[in-house]
Image (cartoon, rainbow, N blue to C red; front, side, top):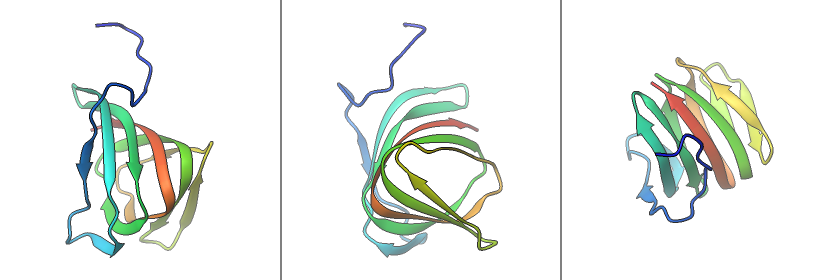
Length: 113
């Protein structure tokens, strides 16, 4: 195993999923995930979603860097965060609300559970 690895979709077959129907708010978003690392409670790779809205509840830490698109995170407290190309965010455990994809969004992610 190399100790430095580029995050890329090249050569990786994505896992294609949709949100749990019980969490779906609107649309028919399709999620494609290119997992690069999955060990010891650490997950990283690339994730893309087509437009739609679903409920989220974070029990883990997630760092995201947006490569393309536009998404909106709306907290249960009414806070609104726009995620656009070039943005980086840390989502902490306990965040609850909705994730709305306005324009197909591609992000890097690192999750620590």
